[in-house]
Length: 274
Image (tube, rainbow, N blue to C red; front, side):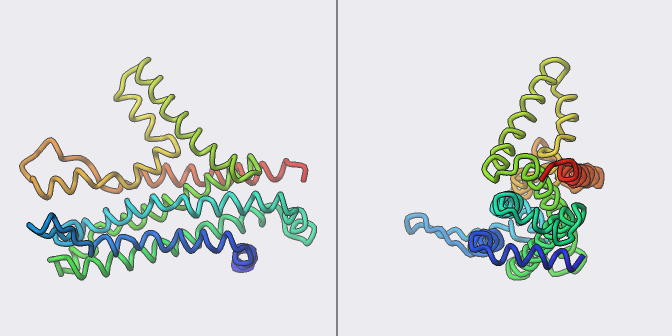
């Protein structure tokens, strides 16, 4: 595994564009540190500091930071599809196979790289969230601090699943631009399918089925925290209550899609004439 991972990392670090995109994808999530310290002055009447609103308290901070950090995954998605596009355009895929790398090892090297960077991103956001929480949170009990850290697991699974989808599209289309465009096409198709099912059956059934679609399943791992923030400010608003927890069946769905994307990527490579 380490040999395959090292091989892929060398390819990425030798590419200037990949290095820049990797740097951006890991630095941008830390903008939450800057956000937490922002002070907004309302015409001299009063100053609002976001960190003082309680949104960076434990345990809600794990939910908030992982939700917003997940939107920066598109930068590394470009790296993932470029890994495949460059292999075909530079003919390095054929050279790797000639040098003795099997097709299975080729796909695994990509997957190990995805897991490595997803794990690194998760560790970084965990450290950032922990430090912000220690500074702003009024709770110091260990049981509260580490409650809901399952959002970190959901964040990791979400990244691995999304990048595995990008890997599959990269293998399918062989061009980075087309692969990224197909993500948008898939998003549209999911909503069209939802609309058709809601029209032909009912909205409740359509929503249940939609939760099994790949992009929707990944999104559902970490639901939006805005209602939860409102609940903390207006606890009497029962209509704001919703299920924001991380569920194991949602993780299982995304892991299932991840395994399918990796398997399909391997099957494509195995059957394709290089």
